[in-house]
Image (cartoon, rainbow, N blue to C red):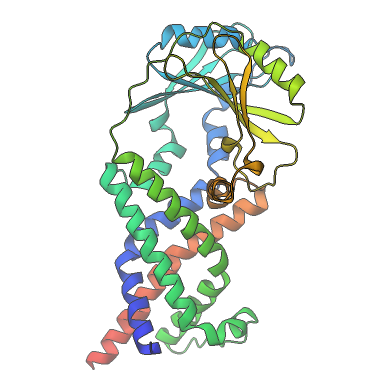
Length: 348
């Protein structure tokens, strides 16, 4: 394929996906700081004056299950002396429930879909357009991937020169100026953009698939065991495991699932792929799944979310993801300017 044909396809892919990539890039850049946004939103509910050693988890679970008996219940934060955070789910609704770690009383009941980070996240993965929006995000992800690949092939001979800043930026000519900037941003952000678009496309496929399926109505049973006691037994039998997420049984007969990390896990493994199942009637451990010991495909799957959202690093990684997220909108705008200038020149 000639460079002329490559340039044509590269332009088409970018132009079709351009407007959507602006939305995906801007929301992605903001979502690099989603945990910080949640900290600001929930600051008034997260810190309590209770003793640093107090955590009445069983009391909190009992309170929430009594008041929300039909909701699927997950515990996403349970640290001594801090508010216990529940994530309640129905097919068409999500709620955040904050519970006092000592009294077990509900501090706040918040519609999760109204929080800033969740609203932006929903815009990012569905454009707030339901199942069809999810499919559209998937299509745009594929187009962006094709745009990156054609751009990589198209500029393969000047990759090294661009990385070494040996490509001149001519300010005297508008098209050449934007073309040079487009090339610099595209090349320098290429590797991470490929990571983001591949992982994002995988996530978009999963989200699209789940959105097109009929959701199952939860039928959660009331827990009869002590979750605190079960976690103590778990800590004694698996001292290298750090529990950080609880999934209460969604249906009768289901197990209590504990997610978290093992001490030797690489930073890029998702904590949700380590699963320890606990019998909801006896409190005994029935199964232990370590992502590091699972087949390669499952291990790769566990890397998708951490790599896409930059969940493995501190401020430096967040800033890097933010800047690369902004590169997509810049490439879309600069690519349109270059294409428009070329089109006008051809007409003349």
